[in-house]
Length: 196
Image (tube, rainbow, N blue to C red; front, top):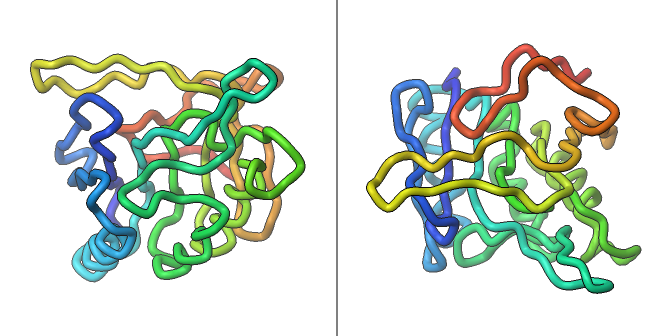
């Protein structure tokens, strides 16, 4: 089993870590297709087996709603992104990753009652199609980057962090009412967290 892999959409400024502990970082941009990403993951699985944790660093899609910046509209990952219109395409990587951690702004936010504005529904649907446990926050995230090539610093999670299981169940992993001793950041595999 491969412990950890990172996909970094370079529109999220900074340099993602690429070390032996983090595996290899795939950098993508607005020209990278979803199939390019899926094929990279399939090759990784062929070489090293199932991926325990896939961290995705990409901008969450947001809008101003009621005077506040809100998310839940998907993620700007590569050319195709991830949203309610194309989440079914992610079935192409079904069973490849145990956990998929989105280091993205407000992916799990719920802005309205329409499924295109319900980030929790998107995360649950993604969990179903990938047969992975999805981890995402409902809040705009803060991070620091440096122009000297140093790895970006995602710091602590903002807001409530949810988990979404393939069977449709979800809950709070980290948030105002539930604290854990540790929570995986973008550069460490999810470990010691039992979500059953």
